[in-house]
Length: 120
Image (cartoon, one colour):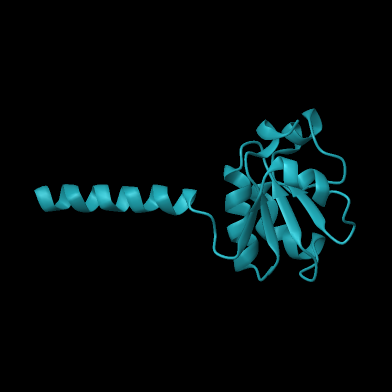
């Protein structure tokens, strides 16, 4: 019985750590770095928050592709030849979106750490 408890704790920790650790091959930038990136017209900027969050506050140049729809619309809306820079409110959903984009075959993916909460 005690062995089962340790196994459950280990699985829980693995799940939590796996969600927090950045995805392999995903570049991490700060919102300060993002200000320089925004000038690059060769990059695609994606905000994965809900449409309501996006309408309330967004950065010019970002396209709203909500996380819950990303799998269905990413390949229609985005080019795999260009870098994709992803933002959300805190950095958690964009981290998840970055992993998802990598699985879909996007090779140049960047996550904005801290998200809109860190944007000034």
